[in-house]
Image (cartoon, rainbow, N blue to C red; front, side, top):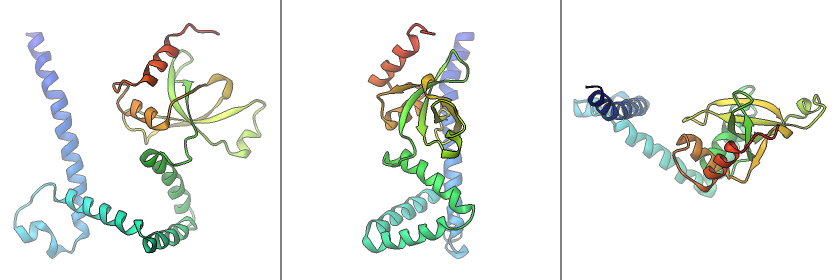
Length: 209
């Protein structure tokens, strides 16, 4: 009986989680319909509620935004708007930080993450993938030896994580791109790559300490 129960769970657990995520995503995107005037709402026009129409609206808004920004006039307008936003106290600081991270995650052209490292986390006998970022001058001047700033993203959502400073001597620099590292983190290591083999070799190597 136990094996039948496990087999059933193997079918329903991933299916149930997938349905839950899709339902949450569709429900969240359907909230974009609230941006439309009430008499334009599909529920009012059609008389019935059709889940998922918000996805179409979200896709259309994102696509239209991309088309507008891609032309010269749109780029100039966005540059001026962005500069004005960056000068707003508190809002500008948040926006700048989020933009740097999103540039790195979505295009790989951002300068937020400089290198991919291995660091000891969450204890001295474990290794975690980390991204090297910038150490503020005021912070680096407080150390007697060289430290690096690292961001350790969580799995499977790399936009959350931990930021702290570690001794450079306690890190291992990897010949891995940010894109590959993010793919490894998001897939929880399931996405097999040559770099994954490198990680396994380092992790299983005898401790030199």
